[in-house]
Image (cartoon, rainbow, N blue to C red; front, side, top):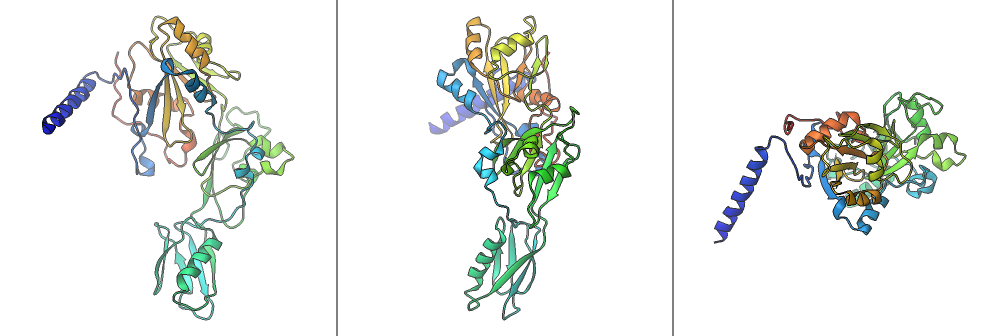
Length: 380
């Protein structure tokens, strides 16, 4: 009996999937999709984007309030209010491809140069492998001393870095010279990195920006490079840390509007601009728009390659009340599809080159998020 039930479940799932394929790209009710894990850095595609569908019409007052308040941590872009940034004291962090030298007093058994391998290990004679990845020099010295004290009495060990290869920071986005900066034992601050990227705080060129994001330790902070240049508070000129990504945005406060509206494009709304207000401003095309499916695509900056897609039905005018309670945020993408919607992967792949969606991941994803040959059909 259990076998029959499992077979019936498998058969029903197969029929469902087959019926979806038969509709050449139509997804009327897309569900959450999680990104694949353990992929090569250069092989991320649109298929790896996690998509969470959230129906605004069914949200409670508290849930809408939660999404309205869920913003990237910011205090008017001022770092001097965020202690975990300005309190950081720079130390070089060891990693693969670094070369260290070891000097053991009173014996030369372990003396020499050691390359940290791709697993973060060095191989000591007579002792074996020791993991040094993600450690500072002082931490590495303590680890090594504890390891070898079982072999040598009262060891006096000194280590130094001979080649600095693993620690980098990145300045990307709307700057004149996108830059990968190699770190060593000398600390570097945000102003020095900005100078290397040829940032010009007085430039009026719209191709370059001042505001953007700092990605650090799986958290995202809003920053404004002008604060570092103009503030008398030294905290604004903070130390950079291994793997920091500074992404400067061209239109940091913009909202992008696409689809069946009479005035698509980039909007620079005031604070607390609601979805209903934006629909009214951009002008819904009542002949071609799918009034059941108004979407807000919002990147989840604290989750890798994932978006929340908020859905609002305005087929009934009363639903505009829910839209009036839902507040838009900077960098939201408002998409109003035609009567028949394309697949979500296709939709997002069309929006990628026209928006800043996922741009702040580069150079973590070397070539950006690529589109693929699958799920590309559009229903007429």
